[in-house]
Length: 485
Image 1: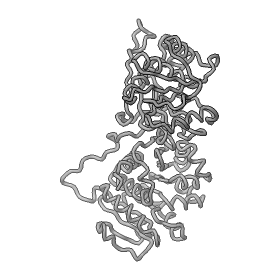
Image 2: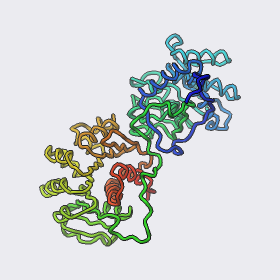
Image 3: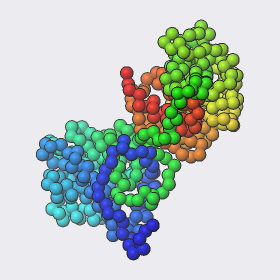
């Protein structure tokens, strides 16, 4: 409870940028949330500038990142509050003995009040402003303060030229709040974007840093809350999946246990020429701890997996009617008449159902199947890549990638399902409106069979009794943590 004798005095603040990997499940804030928090702070604490705090945090991290070459720090200051943060950092770095070169073409009369104050303070401290990048100059660090969460247009002209020049420099690059040109809500690039080695984001994490083009542009993400009490922040539906929580972990197995206690997983797929997909899924399910796994392979010539003989095989029409802990259908399924009939039968199975690959393509092509899937009483989990998501929604892959979070939430609502929209920063959306952005993984997952492995992992966790939403989040995170071969 606030002290009634100190109603407007915020808690003491010391810069403390923290790497994202050290924070557990931090909330995600859209640009509108951040603007609302800024307004609320200004009303409650008119004498305490968040810009000064942001600049102090930036100077603190910049001091650690700048190379020891003795070359100056280059700072790009834009026309908004992001530029003001950069100018505060410039003043504080210069006071610590760093040589600083500030480039800005912002018109003083059009600056927001706090940014105008930061500009005046920089000039009063003896600083100067350049209107262009100095030619043939080397730098110990570049600080990007051109554009933040307020960017509403594509970056063009002189700023685009500066970004291209900085992207070609060999020194470390630190972006403030978000890399210039990156949409902080969606992670899509607006025209062009700076590619930072580090991004220091303020108050709370922005989803665009973690999905679509965000991971390639942001580098290592750091957060400084600027001393704002988390209790004063609004509730948001999204989190960054940085580590597994207790809800993502199965209880320790008793020594006095048997395979029947850890689930019977059924996997249907493996048409001729695509059997490998179902084998990969089955092997992954066993590796993730499923008590037993039976494959219903459409290619009837396959009756054993010599690399993993623990896998059992059954006719898919028989397997779909078997009492199972969980059923997954799709890896290597194909889109034949037989595949359609198997999916129809799977949709009435009295257990959690994981739909992937061609099962999703069949749903997209048959409104009756889609309607059945949305009306199931048992949990449904969808694991589409952007192309499959596009077919499910009658859109293009470009549309899907332009707003991955919105897409995953739309699919979750339409199918009343837990959805993992795969890709850079996989989006996991739940029917209750919550979502998570995964932070594990990398480009090594972009290969055939990767999605089949995820299907098996999800099915195994479901079969062992984990809640459907938690199982999907845990499987996605663990899948990303796998060491590339």
